[in-house]
Image 1 (cartoon, rainbow, N blue to C red):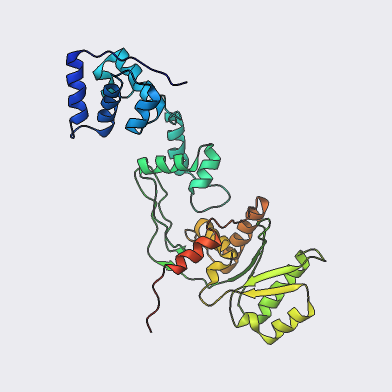
Image 2: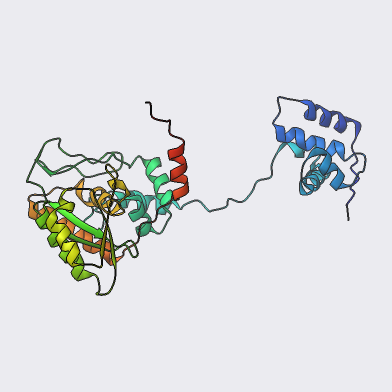
Length: 316
């Protein structure tokens, strides 16, 4: 049943309401509230007033009541509301700032937002706001074996590293990521030839329980298509290999593991030898497998293909 509210307005209040409703320099919400009260003067049902002004019935009731309680002045201000979430306590903010200047856990080279959020029990966005307010974020810097130790991060001062470094060689990391549970099988080798690749295939073959099929997505390297590799695959019929297209290695989910390994353990690290580097990679892989999480694509295939359709047609 439609409700009817009788709004009584004095001559002076009516003039003020009309002035507010016609003043284009005022906020739109003020003019809309004044029009609600003016439209209610005829005593029409709330439903009809709401339909005429294209607003909701609760809005008509709200501003009719506000005008009755506070007059025209009450239409020009919003009531204060309780915040949806309580602000972070000053003690927590100080704790995050202090922890940022300490060594991160698990031999990581620096604190990440997610690691800090997990350690302090607050959200990632809260950590980011605290860091932004205290200017504790620093850019990612590649680090090898620096000639001098860098200065640690402190409040108001970024961590430092020397620009010169020593090279101690390279290592090749072969890694296979299980897309179902996020676990990684990794092995460091000196080279990336078909011999090393076959040894890594044997590692995966032994790790996967017998009877289970293996769908492997690998980069489109010539090493992975060597005749001896093809012969190995022919002797292991449960394997099916899918090659990523040229320049499309980013499609391989294991690249996400390589990215996090680089950002959290390698880029800012300092390694005195290849053995030191390989040991750090092995420890990180073990820590990752202790709490594995599968990587999930956030974008759907349909949205990715839609972006491709929006690309300009190639010129002939």
